[in-house]
Image 1 (cartoon, rainbow, N blue to C red):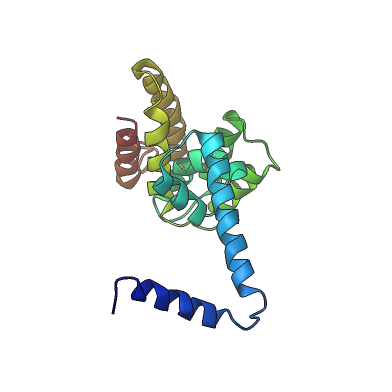
Image 2 (cartoon, rainbow, N blue to C red):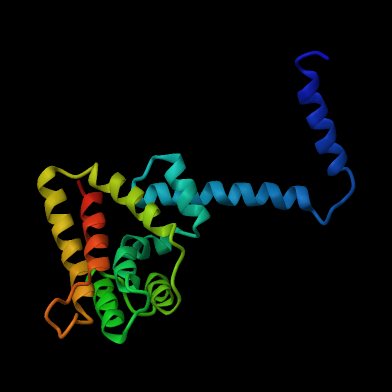
Length: 188
């Protein structure tokens, strides 16, 4: 067997698989790949992210240019879910935080955030958020990084404080505190 034989055999198998019409399967696969590539290019333009691995992860998680704003606010949702459920006060705090960042009620991003508050989202969104923040803060001056982190973490803290705590003395639970520390580390 020569070195090219393996590649030739692979091509033959692929050709034989697609030899008969299979409801346009080959064309649908090609279109899906082109669509994924377009989504990655659009996300790169909107976000400034150049890392192909990060872009692929975002697309696989269903993040599109119109939902990128929701991803930037995902940690507010994660803080709301930290204790296992989201109460009315936490929900309101998250949605106020979204509106303060320019996410308008009725927009795709707003509706996505509201959906995440109704049903716990995929845990993979937090690492995707970390990757996004890593890309974004790497482009900021140290002064702007501090401002960006302070503003974001204040909103996350407001969500943690929204429900109150034991006898309303300590509004932030230990689980929320650990998550807030994790979020803070993403900005360093």
